[in-house]
Amino acid sequence: MGQQEFRLSGSGGQGLILAGIILAEAALLDGKNVVQSQSYGPEARGGASKAEVIISGNEINYPKVRHCDVLLALTQVAYDKYIDFLREGGTLILDSSVENKSNRKDIKAYSVPILKTAKENLKKPMVANIVALGSIYELTKIVNKDSLEKAVLNRVPRGTEELNKKALEEGFNLIKNHKEECYEGKC
Image (cartoon, rainbow, N blue to C red):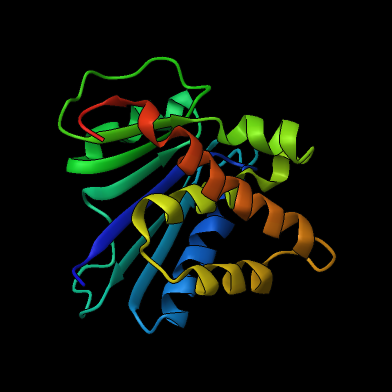
């Protein structure tokens, strides 16, 4: 397995830092090498937020994402800020609430209702990060499905395990149901 770089971006309060930690833990459970980092604006909730994860079967020589293979963008601001750092041939997972999209034809781009699914189907907007992880898994298969579920259950607050398992399943289903609805490139 080669190296894969992920950037999960949105706004503070969407749980993307936790999502990055969970993705990294799942890769560790699979015996892969991992680096995880994060940053967020000084305003915390509502400000810019990103988590980065590098997963490799080999040694990781540089701990920062330069040009990601997978970009998750849950907000317009995150999309605008990071789209140019998605490498050619990369995968964009964009929340369907983001309206202004670039004209890049060199990527695979999916517009899926991650935030809406968490809010309307699960009645808990706070699990959008877990829905997003399910979508990332379904598109990349970067980690073992059981490892991802175990990492989710290891990290979510006690008493929310069933809700988060449902959120993960919703994320899997979003891609299964929307995979043909890519808006750029050849999916």
